[in-house]
Image 1 (cartoon, rainbow, N blue to C red):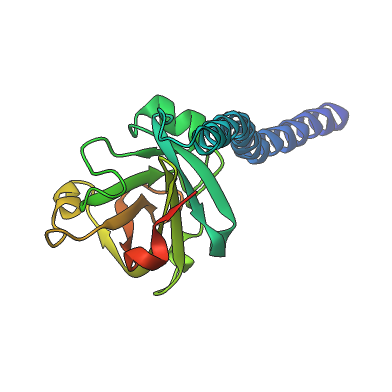
Image 2: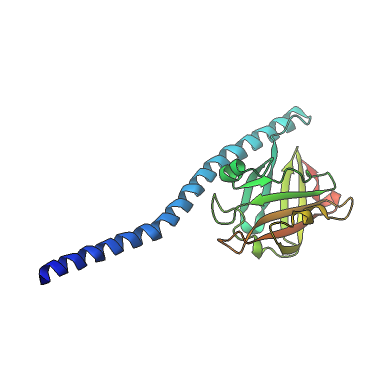
Length: 204
């Protein structure tokens, strides 16, 4: 009888250990998988962007550009191709996407980029650490646009109208992600403003 109880307790203990391994390992495996998927897509997209930019410069004219732009945040060591449209497919493949109803660089409107914070490469994992004056760089149609961080704000998910409230004729960029980490309860927006044209817009 005692041996039977011991066997049962041993089986229960083994089951608990295995369940614990699954519960701990599953999220890690999922994050690793999504990172790998995003990394492959980013590599291909940035390579295509760089080829298109080189062809434009070599030909001496502004040819067709990819449907998106390259985003760089030097402080965070982030460089991403941003496709046009923050669709679920784009966010899964690239980790980021341009919010389609916002502007393009040089439009004197807000250019808004949505990005994942904890999965699919987590490109915006640490954007809460950005401070006033930090650089945000966008390469688009053979021009480089340099923005500097001016503010950050936490809003509700239904407050998308804040992206359309910039002063007229002011070029800004907004990086949008979920906050707090591992939650979609609110949105964190980091704002950047275009620097003086002679210092920020450079033909490549």
